[in-house]
Image (cartoon, rainbow, N blue to C red; front, side, top):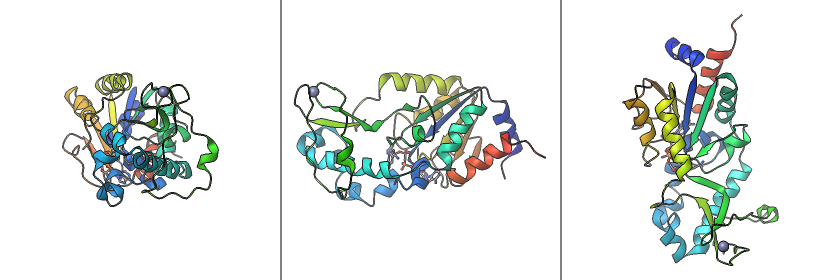
Amino acid sequence: MVPLSLIEKLQNVKHLVVLTGAGVSAESGVPTFRDALTGLWANYNAERLASETGFLADPALVWGWYEWRRRRVLHAQPNLAHTTIAQLAIQVPELTLITQNVDDLHERAGSKDVIHLHGSLHQPRCFICETAYVIPEETVQDIQLNQESSIEPPRCSLCGEPVRPGVVWFGEQLPAKAWQLAQRASQYCDLLMIIGTSGLVWPAANLPYLANQAGIPIVQINPEKSSFNSIASYNLCGKAGELLPQLYTAAFTPVG
Ligand code: NAD
Ligand code: ZN
């Protein structure tokens, strides 16, 4: 049951901020960070796969792991949570979508101007000169990878140095513009929705606290408890692909 006061808030919202994490893509078959702990993250320490030092030590291991993840995402489809968020943007006067995800499922569901705090699997760049690199389509076809496939990274066409994944690694700053926009939106919206994030990764996890300090109501959708339960005015316990459409229908579908 969706609380009536939440339905009313959604119907009257002027600026809605939606903050998503790996949980929003879970129903598309993309493993969350925690799910992935049973995989390669469990066998190799995270710094080895997701840091500059790790990349310099073994570029083929790191590139191969991200290629495996990127190809999984290419084969995944947006789910009802992604599409409902895109529909919400049409219903409310202003919606800012902030994601910690490095997949492109929000965009493929129709969301525009998505703020990616942690970069993207689909936008690699030169490790040295930062020139964008476009991965040729044919490399995507039919090459069976597993998460331990070592693949030499491609070379930058300008300077010849290795290309790196376009994601934010441990020890790196968030993209400045994205972070600035995200902080501002979280402080000046009138409702913040947190979907599928554990709140363990900082500084992204600070955004709900900024909203809370500004007195902005927070609604959380997550099948499990997260660190945000204590500051959320509404904790909707369940899967995003089920609860978001229910919330949307309750708020925006005319009765009768
Ligand atoms: P996390 O894995 O730490 O937490 C995922 C959260 O989603 C958990 O709280 C879990 O209970 C919840 N969840 C699981 N299934 C759900 C569902 N069906 N509906 C709603 N919630 C659900 O993820 P995080 O907080 O985003 O932090 C992990 C970091 O790893 C992020 O920086 C992110 O960039 C990265 N990551 C990204 C992807 C992706 O792009 N799809 C996948 C894995 C990890
Ligand atoms: Zn270069």
